Image (tube, rainbow, N blue to C red; front, side, top):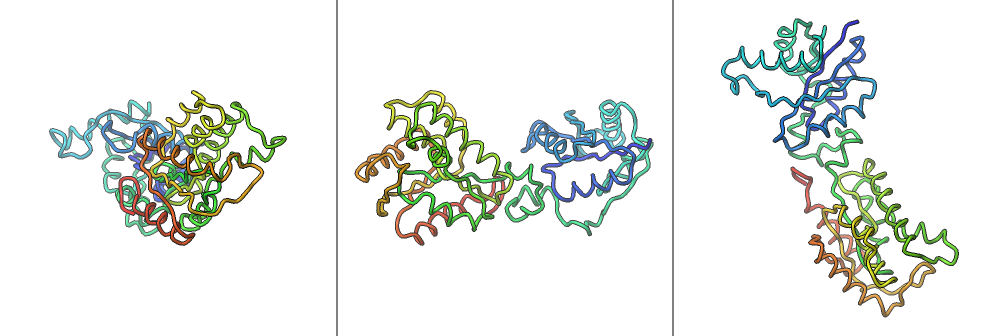
Length: 331
């Protein structure tokens, strides 16, 4: 059986890496992917290995954590550089590969060091013109090259926050087409509409938090650049206090565990609309808005106030989200 080796950082995995490993799978009898990482790198190596295992469950994926030099000029000599890498790879693989697949120039020398045959794969990047450096610099620009399992790492999460009947859902629906058409609806409404009399208990609020988090995580891979979330667990904490006089400790902990890059605090400058699953009268909106702002400040959450006409709200919210840019890159 001829086993092939694919070595890389995969920081992050992208369509070019997928092509490389798929090529190796179709060429060799078996494939081992070695994810090499350094502790100081911006994307944890364990996460990159997990991504590769999800992308290629039928392939052996090994995570090499040796703090090896990354180029010959980081070692005492070129010979020692290759000796270090040969020792690491043979140790983690257990046996030398028969084939080495690579798109980079190092592949030929690495194959020679391991006593393997070198198989070049699209060295001129004719099939897919993308690199990990380009993706890290501007992941939003190269979003199409990111596998679905990798996208949540570079996704911006935006919470739309505020009282009842302030236009949160309308804003989410308006924003979604600008960011791939995906948004996380308010799970509280989904849950409450199934309850007799639309009543809620402290235990029900926990179910709402679980549902909201589950929806966000399920949709994160389908979103583009930003996931728009209609409310979040911190807003459920405000409701816990408003309805039951105290914040449920479980909900408070769940809220602390969620990260949002931006919160859009929606004002109450729109007409009140009655609804069977709304609990406060119109007169209560202003006070609830103040509670919302206070809890955002207490949690150190970055937020932008959104008010005005529907078009003004959309313009302000879009500008705020675009202003975030992509993590580690441009906008």
